[in-house]
Length: 435
Ligand SMILES: Cc1ncc(COP(=O)(O)O)c(C=O)c1O
Image 1 (tube, rainbow, N blue to C red):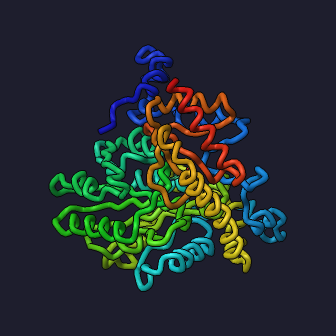
Image 2 (cartoon, protein in one colour; image 1 turned 120 degrees about the horizontal axis):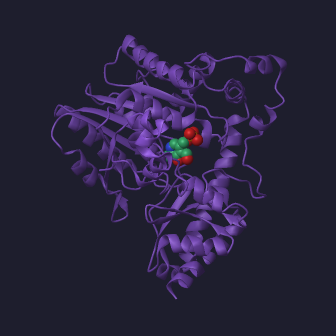
Image 3 (cartoon, rainbow, N blue to C red; image 1 turned 180 degrees about the vertical axis):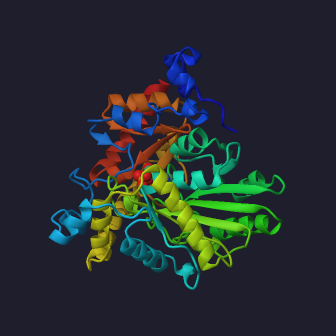
């Protein structure tokens, strides 16, 4: 359980002068808990700036090091005058109406299990981070518990704990190379009451997506919990949706399975183009709701509440991005361009599998955690401190992230011809740390 004032926030509070200083005295509980995670992913990534191989941040680069981009997005910067004019104006707090409709249609296209299912219209947020904040604002009371796997994106701490006062309760992510559904079941087995579960597939940091069987098991588990009388909130962070590289892995969002699972189960889908369409800086995301037998009026009420939080926090999301994205989603070449970029990432994924299979000696330095999707993979370091290994990598022109005691590798950002070298340097770094 994690909800005390963290050490990092405490340093800032002490620096302010605690009760002696008006700026501290007037801080809210939330204000006292917030800090900037300088040592987190962003800080580690800043340290790796200029590295020859930089596998830190979850953006994606072409083989030549330029940002990986869909051609239609690039071309959209020379937009028709009408689009340019619209881009100057405010969008509604709900988001551009045609874009919301288009994203809703895309959800149906990408998730066959949503056929015939009633869900809200997506409300536009300022990307996924903000969608997560909106969900926290709507569903988290201080002291509420959010159940998540122990390998999770570190920003959940700031969003759910520090900003909204939640406690994070983790469960074991993997057992014997598989998703540990039994551990999730145990974490949820706390009697009746509100249960908030946050799931993220493809996952950051592991790059793991559940198999078809595991997806079914998770949904059965959440549904049976709702059936026993708990109110279940399933928060689904689908940031890396669609980037699945193996057969037998669940390619849709769990939202499709959970949307009509039970009257006591609210499914909240948070997704967007940031990672899916390689537009990290656009800051557009969506939040969508569903529950069994929901009426139009109920779904509209949830949309209104989400838009209310948007209005209260950012007023409305960036207009140029929404205009460009609507233009892109209406383009005929969009799907094939997206397939091309998916292939770029999949080829890197396959190369990693090949390199690891060819170098059995790496097993003495590190072992790969299960991965099959997304932007990342993680390795567990054998016989050395992961942070020391990260520092050693930096001395050798390799930037990686140390997170939850693992080394995370963003292969989305590493050209194909550097992948072999990346693992060779990592292997050497571990050996140096052990010697
Ligand atoms: C799991 C996960 N969720 C959400 C986000 C936030 O995405 P955005 O940049 O759209 O706010 C990230 C970004 O790294 C992520 O890895």
